[in-house]
Image: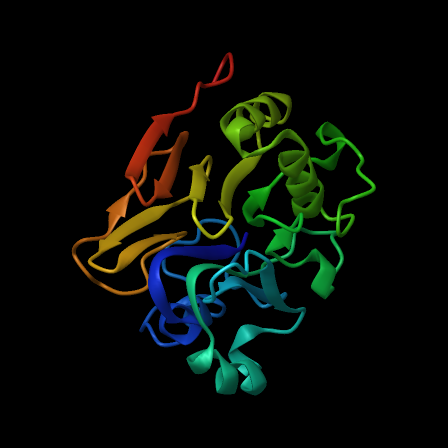
Amino acid sequence: MCRHLGWLGAPVSVSSLVLDPPQGLRVQSYAPRRQKHGLMNADGWGVGFFADSVGDATPRRWRSPAPLWGDASFESVAPVLRSRCVVAAVRSATVGMPLEASATAPFTDGQWLLSHNGVVDRKVLPLSPTAESVCDSALLAAAVFSRGMDALGDTIVEVGAADPRARLNILVANGSRLVATAWGDTLSILRRVDGVVLASEPYDDDPDWEDIPDRHLVEVTADGIVLTALNRSKGS
């Protein structure tokens, strides 16, 4: 349910990450190769990024409830949008969830951008007046934001224990940190000479793509890449 991608590194165009690759998010919106749940991601898309200018740490977003493959306006602008840090997603909405831009990742608290690839029972999530939508992903994002990114692993483990059927692949970034979890769905990493890509699935056939093991958290910073196992809930 959804595909997402994150970038941290040298400034690159949004188009080079989302639209140009042969199996990028645009293609994944109608023909994902590794998606286990759902056939396509036609229920919206979103791109968040940080401006490539000194002193500007504000996350910017462009979101739509329409399929990515048909958005000519975004296609015309994406080549000139450049950023050192990007979070992008295409959406396959959970049954019963609203189809609207506010329910489409990435979500933000004004500092971080967050995408959720998966599904979770809303009953195990706290209600939050800061959630951007009533959809499960927005409520999960609000819960993550409220506890902070240093507690991301603990938050995912606790939500996973409360809802054993949840799929909790999270991708978050703040311009200098890129963090993701693999919990119930696919996640891959590509170490490039100019930066690092984390994605639900590879956007091309480069042999340097590596799979992140399930129930793991990966963090990318200027200091390197750290992979951490997430404690499994009892009985899992």
